[in-house]
Every structure is written in structure tokens, then in C-alpha cells.
Length: 192
Image (cartoon, rainbow, N blue to C red; front, side, top):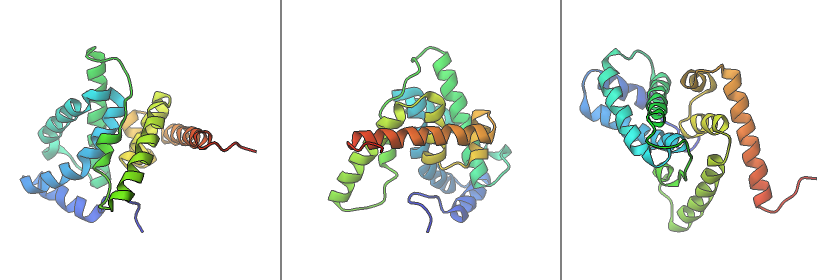
């Protein structure tokens, strides 16, 4: 069974092919599928300016789409690379200082339909997890966001970050281990 929120690769690939051929409805499907995750990633990188940077990213994606060659995972990595470059440009221009903020609003759109109680409990858990991710060192937070939120594999995330896949795996592993430790301590349990 695919993980919750996983993209249906066949449908995504079909939409990508149609979007490259100029189908606006197909591009809208790509956007609706990828943008919430992209904004969540950017919120971890540039904070509250994530929506503006995402807009710049999509502008660049539209301009370069007919030149793009690759499948669905390569498209997500290409889009994440553009987003990261736009985000780093944004930070260099001095509009904001590097910071991380709560990612809850952007990721809330990723949830499937549930009952109110389930949504409330999941929202609390998601907000808590995202605040913990925001507190990680930047390389670990970015690796976790790319791997978990955007769903990129290690080689694709490495391509986005300009690092070796092993370095991304290590950063993600360390970040996830820190998250587990913090969640364990926040829950009041101690390691024996």
C-alpha cells in the first residue's frame, strides 16, 4: 500500500506529458499535486515568504516546461531545485534572514478526508512534528523536508541540494533520529 499522500505516479506522468504539450488542465493537476508540498518545503527555507517564492518558482517552471525532459520524480526534483534556488536568492537579497517557521498551514492541505476528531488529532501531531523539524539544523531540516514532505528519494534530494546521496541520507537520518529523541522526551519517556 502506498504511503498516505503519495502521488499516483502513472497519473502524474500522464499529466506531465499533457502539460508539456500545452494542456492547461493537466498543468493545473501538477500544480495542485505538488504546490502544497513545495510551499511546505519553502516555508522551512524562507519562512513566511514561502508563497511568494513558490510563485516565482512556478513562473520559472512554466517558462522551462517545454525544455524539461524526464519522468514524474525528475519533475519533482527539478521543481524543488528551482524552488531552492529561488529561496536562496530570496535570502541573499536580504528580504529576510534565514529562519524557519511553523509549517502546519502548508502541509494541512496534504491530509486526506477524515472525521473532525481525526483531523484535530492529526493537526496537533502535524503541527508538533513540523515545529520540531523547524528546530533542526538547516541541512537536516532540508533533507527531512525534501525526503518526507516532497517525497524525493536520496539521489533526487541530493541533486536538489548539490550534495552526494549519502550525505543527504545521513542528514535525513540524523534529523529523523533527533526528531524521534525530541518526541520521546516531549512525551516524558526516558531512554533506558
